[in-house]
Length: 549
Image (cartoon, rainbow, N blue to C red; front, side):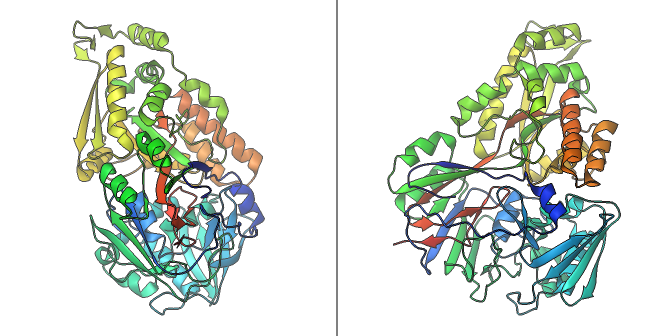
């Protein structure tokens, strides 16, 4: 939340109480008191221009797995439920819900006063249409359908009551459905070609966009004047304060910073850590940041083939490089080094496994020596005539100086005797490499406000097999699979603590990940841009935003 100008605040967006909230079925709380940089009262009107650093492949979050799809679609789309910073589940378009004793059916009582901006009524039939759209093969959902894999059917019980049925208990459902990836879209629009939805979507949200998303340019939103159904956790009710919200794509860090300093834009995404201190020194500007729950920015070794098929080589790479120091030097303390595949503010995070990731260069060298990797004259280890070589594809134009970090890791890996080759690729080639397993090391972050992100990233059912999937280490472990499956079948916090803890320890024991840093979204803004808040997945939202004079 925004506080004083020219001071950076860190907001830990967490989901620690999610399971308890599901158990309760309905958790109510009063809206947080609005906090602004100037301390003034919100005013209506005006345009806020926000410069984002990246493009998305598609505006429709039912189709896209991109985090930027959630950012760009959220002003338009509301969800059935909302999450607070501490992960409690609250009403939104659904007034209340119940969970059946066998945990197979969730029944939602819906608001009866909500309308899509194209005039369609929001009702149980609309909810069914959205779930049907997500799981429809023609939608080719890259994320949402996988998040509700046990989905069987959504059934209209009456005009404003709908049930969602699963084939097996699914405790991760409510935190998932709170995200923009399950935002409610107008049913008539869901009949369009998926390509059209990638450009223009229609929702019930506080903003609407008739022109839609233009690749490499951005999107312009107008206020929805009829909006009056914000979640109770918002800082106000009724229409948004802003008349217009403009999100423009400015990938170059220096250009975004210059645009903010000159007043051309009101707020910008992704302040490079090296520039944070200078921006904070400007009395006309401030920064704010939120650390995301879910998967950290991690390196994943390919355990199916190549040198990382050997657990000793994986262990040597993990403990032989001082990742904490590298992250600190590249990001100047703006990002917290990671010592787990998931962020510490994720529900059921197990701190006991952190010691597995401690730096020990001498032990790493001994592991490689004992495994038969002999240091060559060129500084690269060799075994049976083959070099200790690893290939890592990276998306060209990497955000957050990830390419700089990779170069630092590359230099440290060379000291151990690894020949690490970094390959810059376009998004299509990168996704192809993920699907085919043609990599030794892959880098990716995967924010999600649920501990079920562990299943997304490590369950063997999610190993890519020609297409896009998310178990990037490509490892099969009955311990991990069973623990994460059992976690879906219980709402008991003690059982969840044990099950998610077991999975995290097995991930550490099998060396399935090299954590880098906890992703934090660092936003910079003019003092005139007030009330910008955060989604639980740590990207900015603008319903409460306003412009001061």
